[in-house]
Length: 221
Image 1 (cartoon, one colour):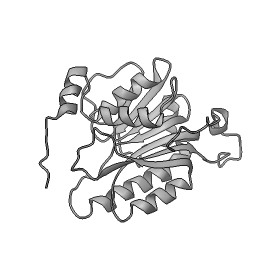
Image 2 (cartoon, rainbow, N blue to C red):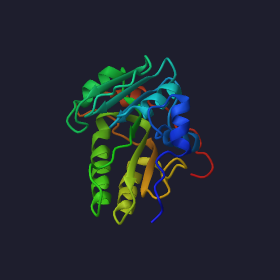
Image 3 (cartoon, rainbow, N blue to C red):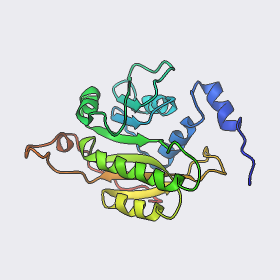
């Protein structure tokens, strides 16, 4: 088994550049490869502690954008003015409250969450987390929005990809260079959410109001 290097180049770089964790570079590399966060948009980070992805998303959306984070743990590091973060269970916190805090439906939903365990069932539990995130999307993600969520590779990974493909126009797995070589983590990057056309009350939804027509896909998709 390869030896795990704790203080690697990404750890040192995070310290130098003011990020609270090396995971910041995972999101940076995902965005550079897949262009998943728009300037001026609204971004939701599920399981946001310790806050590195909040920092990166804040820079990408700029001062006119808004980033909302949710985690069971409180964020201790001071965040930029365009970031809001709350303590709560991702699967129990009211979706309408998150949308209200953001000002509108989200253009991108992020999740770097992992199951609170290691061992033989780590993969299966990570897939369950992703399935639950997909279940939440109709009340959070606007039409043509994007999604990034972490999963550990295993036998159920192809099924998760197939389910995600039914909901999005473009779906691919991506492993950033900042991920540890020994890790089985993979990021499902999904673009152009098909989403519901209308809310359950029959009225026009905010999904339609803020929908952005997808540009031609980049090469490699």
